[in-house]
Image (cartoon, rainbow over all chains, first blue to last red; front, side, top):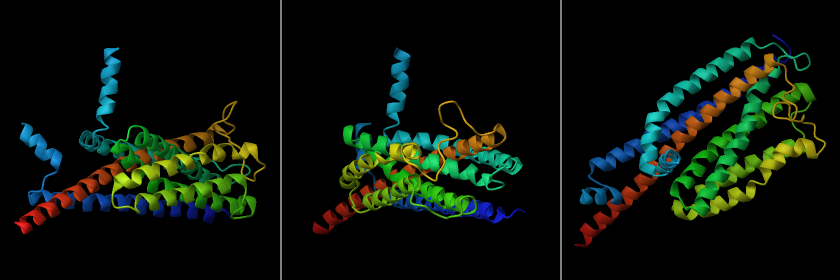
Length: 57
Length: 255
């Protein structure tokens, strides 16, 4: 342990916290959007482009 | 020639949101695994790296500070290219890319400022100085916050896309200012020691951990950017589908 260890640990600690928050937020957002899409699809709602593609085929 | 055209065609295909989603779904698990492995290797090399004869153990802060600072500029450059995509080709995926990148860039810029400050205190004897490099990076952080606010200020992404793209391109002037601030002005921040004419001035025992950490964080950036882009495409689809649902419910109500 040197006199500067606290600064090194604080740097790595802050980076872990900030990056964990960023990654966590992206994963939560992913779950929210996936669930919303699934819920809309089970209600039978389709996007216009999907309806057009179905009509064309 | 035909091979070049087909290869270019394949990349252009990715600009289609549905094809991008398929591509991201296939690539992301692998990209995530490689990112974790490279970052673990970088951390191992960081632990093994010797202390610097002048900086002591604080040189280990450089292994994260420098990649964060590089990525803060790289992310803004990607956003500026996306802004060109929005203004020149008016492609919705370009706006998705810019909007998804902004919070990631802001996080990396904040970390560059925080870790720099934590290095500056024991090495310079101060947490902060208003020199050209530190101030221009702080301005970059404010630019990111402004862009994040603007992308979320309007409900319709088509309306905010143009304004965000113009603001992003105007702000790009700050990137060369950050890069060359240490040469143009007399700053407390040291000049470039890796990407410079005449090669790096760092000993290989410290240069390699730095480069591996930089590769690891760059991979992390691309992984997170791709994930955030996929979330944004899904978010826009959810909004579009809710509108369709509301319209059809209204039609049923008026009959």
